[in-house]
Image (spheres, rainbow, N blue to C red):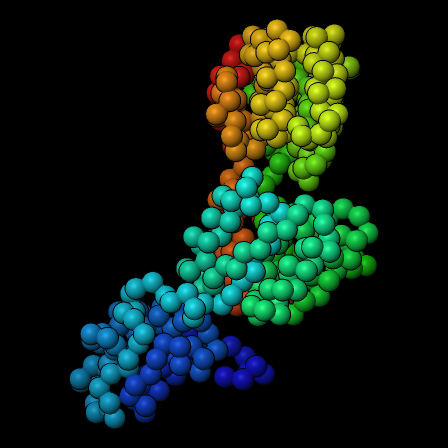
Length: 374
């Protein structure tokens, strides 16, 4: 099949496979895939369906036409492995995945993508980058294109600033499909959406606020790291829900701080805790886990009891359960994010650019532990 020809329908593919079997007798899965312009996984599915329909018979090491189907030049089509076994990864289309961290938040997303890849007919080639280095992200993508020849891309690029906007424009202009993971963006003069899979972070924050309000808290503060790209949406969910529930926000801590490794961190934590004491704030939503754990440690040093004086809910649930006390936390469905992103990309790879753009939002859930009890 040439690039100019439209893709074959499933029934047409299977008819071609049978025709080749009658004429050539012996074929490999990779040869069939190349001839039909599909993946080896698709070929194996066609083989399985033809066998279920009785159009072919499976034999050891291959398949053949049923004996009643008439004479053939050779008795079997030889395959690389049994049609029911896992596909050879080398036969799958290479998909690049560029993530900003390989040690926090992202490993579960990568695992979800890797686990879903074989069934989607692809294999993942992973590259680590950074949260805000536009040049490095572009370098990693270029390497995947030039050295691996990827046929699709999953990526979490920077999205703030002029350089990031140029990067998004470059990514969407590539000849391969691109799906953003835990990021959203628009491009062009009409601000068209880029295909994406994201956590509904505003909803996650709303879950935490509603739970704390139900526990009797009327002042619920917010404390988050400025380094996380999710902070604006988490803060939006906190503020909108607190306003909807008519909670008192006047003087309630609303702090965007450097992360826990920054020299200014301790000052920001004390400022927030001073505000909690001064205003009678009895609960805090803290993004992310590491900041929440550090804040609770400072509470202990200052004699502020958690949860007796201050209930704390973390956002991310990477290591929140390991703290003392164990932290209640909002948990994004990270594995599902990776799994869904691969499925979305595979569909785009098969359907082409005419397929409508999809934006998938996955809801997180709240895990209640010791740090928020009354």
